[in-house]
Amino acid sequence: MAAAAAAAARSLLAAGRAGAGGRRVRVQVRVQVVPAAGAAPFCTVAPQQQPQPPPDMKRYMWSRYKEAKRVTKELVPSIMSNMLNPDAIFSNNEMSLSDIEIYGFDYDYTLVFYSKHLHTLIFNAARDLLINEHRYPGEIRKYDYDPNFAIRGLHYDVHRALLMKIDAFHYIQLGTVYRGLSVVPDEEVIAMYDGSHVPLEQMSDFYGKSSQGNTMKQFMDIFSLPEMMLLSCVNEYFLKNNIDYEPVHLYKDVKDSIRDVHIKGIMYRAIEADIEKYICYAEQTRAVLAKLADHGKKMFLITNSPSSFVDKGMKFIVGKDWRDLFDVVIVQADKPNFFNDKRRPFRKVNERGVLLWDKIHKLQKGQIYKQGNLYEFLKLTGWRGSKVLYFGDHIYSDLADLTLKHGWRTGAIIPELRSEIKIMNTEKYIQTMTWLQTLTGLLEHMQVHRDPDSQMILEEWKKERKELREMNRNFFNAQFGSIFRTDENPTYFLRRLSRFADIYMASLSCLLNYEPDYTFYPRRTPLQHELPGWSDQLCTGTFRIPFLQETVQIK
Image 1: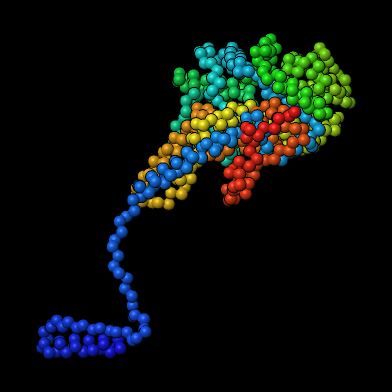
Image 2: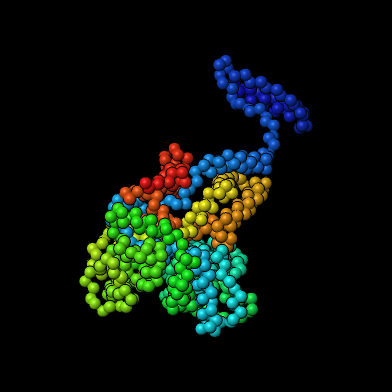
């Protein structure tokens, strides 16, 4: 039917042209094709649509932003109702105290805690040694110790004289690089390091030292806070006065001066002369040791500090009979060499502090021994493996070798933990951190919008996110932030803490909150490719977190 109609139309057109004698004649042909009954139409033409106006992306983006703000504000009260307990013990590895028969301790910043006056003493004494023995300018005496400048775990580039914070992936946290007392612009840092990554061969060695070509030194010891401050002050003096100097020599001179404060007995004599000024938390240490003794636990002490210094400190903390609590006491152990050197024998120290020449066949309770090595210690005591738990504040010198080579369980004492948790429990921090995470998620999901309006808004959000990150850093330390985190990643300090410590806590007193058969379970945090665990979903992310109201009190 359709073919016939088309043929007829062509015939009419041809006839029209012929009848006009070659003149073009406009012929209007109207052909109506009717499909057979019951047949479908030959084609369907959609009705013409009106053009749609372009979406208002500004309005859409900001509505999502406001909704995220509203949800975040509603979430904060529920977070505030579950504050973390600053006196909790946190676990990196599952461990039951029922398996622990023997408890070992470092002395400084483990059994004994020092007041804020000690770091000022160390700084001043080392500064004076620089001037008097290393012939540094007397004008550096104008610099005083600032307890709020540095944090533990920072790296120092020995050749460039830069103090900085590095994350677990060897990336420098921009904005935390200091030359002297002034921050180095991000552009300059990126130019110096060809980015912000520090290659493995430039990082500090296994014990955090700058050696064998490593250009970075990591400051892991609490005693290193005055050292970082002194380095920064002297660098600042040289820079402000346009004095040309060799950074490597400065680093060595400051390191030697800090060492001499200890080796020459300056610090020890000052503490012994005014022990109440420098030592604190004595009653808590005494309570922990008494509790362990009451439960029949064996205890030992291994410290790098000298005999008379430890004896006076322990008498102040525990009492004149403190040695009766310990099965073995070892002083001037020279950790970490103590854990690796098999050659040095033990020497007994008598009541007057005199070293005896007797050969040691047994480590006796109530006696004090000097030097020695762990291999001889294990041979004489038989204390091996996971029944031993050793506590210390230095992640490398105290804990690393014990967990990697000898299978002891390890506990890290991190005094900064208590103050950081208290900050994390404040409403201002919770509000800022919750909104920062929400805004980051918003940026991630909305970046698919490529139109100019959306891109402009995303840039505004990125700027706000950067400001929130700086605000978050300032909650902890204005220069370097938290010792545990960079903007997003764990710090290099936390990476080592997680590797070498089964458990960690602010002080030994945290043990008073747990029964002697308590089992510590690390929280299972989802990997990046995993969904949140069922426990996190059921408990709104609060499963097994040691909250403030859930502290277990010992009766």
